[in-house]
Length: 337
Image (cartoon, rainbow, N blue to C red):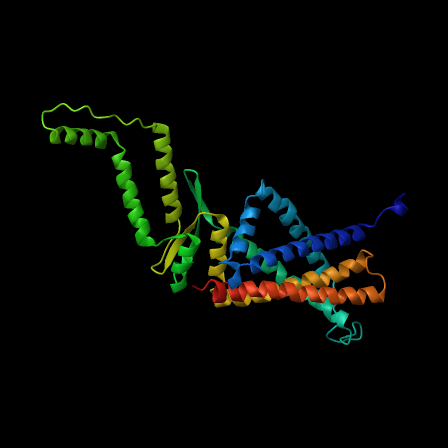
């Protein structure tokens, strides 16, 4: 029985490749959605907003993110780090023990597959931290409406875009005004203020007895409204603003995400980093797709391997284009004004 057992190295290799192909599928979906923010015929990113909202409204989304995405990334990354230590590059350098064979393109692809691994480990972690934690839209509910907030740097185009997307911009002065209004409103709801109003009505009516209608107010509902407004203001105030910044308040998560993507790709250094990120991820994913088909016995002949190599390179080009279009066209072309 022991002789027929599947070797552990084979199991880990298969686990590494199957999680890799799953992440390739996710990458395709991710870049396709992002590209919808980039084109002027996309009605100000309407397709992006709809797709992101559909994902955001999935039930048990945090569980899905952890099990369907986080766990495969973790497994693929840990096994990949293990294999990096045993990798032997033979497309550059030349010694007696380790000859170089740079004339073979697949040797170069093998080397770049490992080199992109080093970069992607740090790039993916940084990307998740930035988009899922640091710049992730905050939210506050007021009544039946839920609002999503992101920090934006003010530019000429943001005002007209905000008008089209039905987004409110709160700079530091507007937030201060809202705080003063809220403080006055809270005072108006105190029993002291209500008594003062009643006494003033009596003065203006002279000695006449006037039957004033009593407003029936549900105290619990009124208290809830005050708490919701206070939470909304506190969420606004969490953003430490300079004179050139504002909080963009959207009525749906997708619009807030669109503004976050726009804000990211306004910054030249982020454009450069994400360019390398997209190209490296697409090469790693689709070169991995080609090796996956071989290791799982899908392409066994040289003819089929050559065919799917061309297909893999084609997909690599298409999805690199989609990813780069999101980087260069979201702000600079589609949503600049």
